[in-house]
View 1: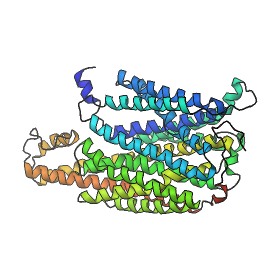
View 2: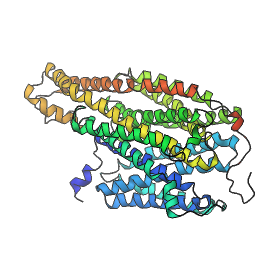
View 3: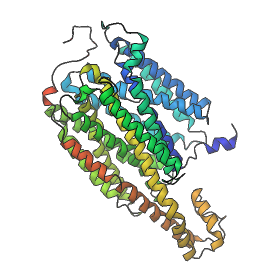
View 4: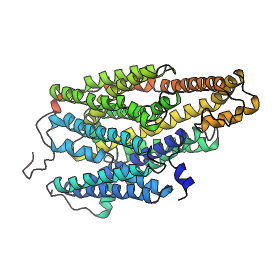
Amino acid sequence: MTDDEEKRIPQVTAGKAEKSEDEDLVVEAIEQETVEDAYHIQLSWRSWLVVFITCFAITAQVFVVVAAGSVIAFIIRDLGDASLAGWIIQAIPSEILPLKFRALANGFAFVGGAIGGLIGALGAGAVTNVSAGGWRYIFWIQAAFHGVTSLGLLLFYRPPKQNRPKMSIGDYIWACDPIGSLLFISSATLLLLALDWAGGAYAWSDAHVAAPLSLGLVLLVGFAGYEWKGRSDGLVAHVFFRQNANFVYAVFAFAVEGWIFYSAVNSVVPQIILQLGFESDSWKIAIRQLSYQLLVLFGSLPVTWYATRYKDLQSPLLVTFIIFLVVTIAYANITPSWNSAQIGLGALAGIGQSGPLTLLVACVQFTAPHEFLSTATGLAFSARAIGGAFGSAVLDAIINGRLNSHYAPAVSKAAIDAGLPEDSVASLLQAFAAGDVGSDTVMGANATIWAAAVKESHWQYAYTYRLAWSSIIPFVVLAIVAVALLKGVKELMTDKVEATVEHVRRE
């Protein structure tokens, strides 16, 4: 790899980064459902399955470093991360502990993930500042953590063998719902592709957007129809709906949470910090994001305690979603002068997301009998990943659409009004795009002109991010309504253990 190529790798624009994240999320959502179905076929195979997945994840991280810049490398990385990301691991503590501790089990799982996210954010911010090739250390660190996980599962997770009827290879394939999986994969891929292209490459009326969008919607309807009438034990098993509508409400709320987190919190907030001038590099942005990371971590502790102590999942979910609604409304009114206020909004966002991330999976799991526990868990995380993917694509379309039509004219006008010659406008905009504000290459630009252009740039980004956050408000309201409709699960939170790892007779 040449030095120029080495330097270009970390220089990813916001739009491209969001598209890469969208693709990651769809790979997660697609892969996890098939893996979860296979996971629950034989209890005694689980330790080997999860060990294999973590080993594959190690290989995937190493391959990215060795084959840097290769599209295949990042596809393999996505597959490795997607297969592990939490849905399989999260099903295990839920079934080996008494049902009354299911909220606690998911709380511990979330705390582990939150600590990993905290270390990852700080570590990534630090190593990318080391050198142009510092991004490689991110994948080496991930490989090391996957190795520790694999070793721990191999040594300590040994579920007892079960006597189950023998199945042929065809039976195993059918148990993974190949028809439903194909419809789901095809519809999700086409819909996301359409939204990605609509984010700036093509107009909504263009065939590149209209064709995959229409076909994706048709396949999505086909998937829903097949899961409804075609089979009762597919990806969306009918058993989830027998008691009440909790499964629908909880999965919908989790999809909205994914929409909020992956699109707004994870993608837009760092852009706000950078483009509104609050911070100027990745390390400082990572430090600033601690206001969110620490609060979402520590906020989960009282949420978990309350839900376990009082056997009430609904109340803390309502409170935290309402807090996040306040955050969303505040971000929809952000200005470039909210430097300190944005830190407070990050803290409130952490509290607002601590409830959904801790308790919604438990709500979904309580709708499923044990033989469908991992499938329900996988479906919940699939909904979250798809929600995040579509949320990122929609916000990308909103942000790029407004910036493409308003940013250049507004910044150019502010610079010209401040005295910049019109023939220097193009070089001024190129300097902004390259992050080279104050560059001497812009002829006729003095400190006053740069100050006027920078101020207008900050405001144009503020208007754009206001619009993006405003689009999220209705979904948060719908999630609050869904949570309010949940039925209580107090009678289900008993001492029963569904899959003890102790070699004793189970109930």
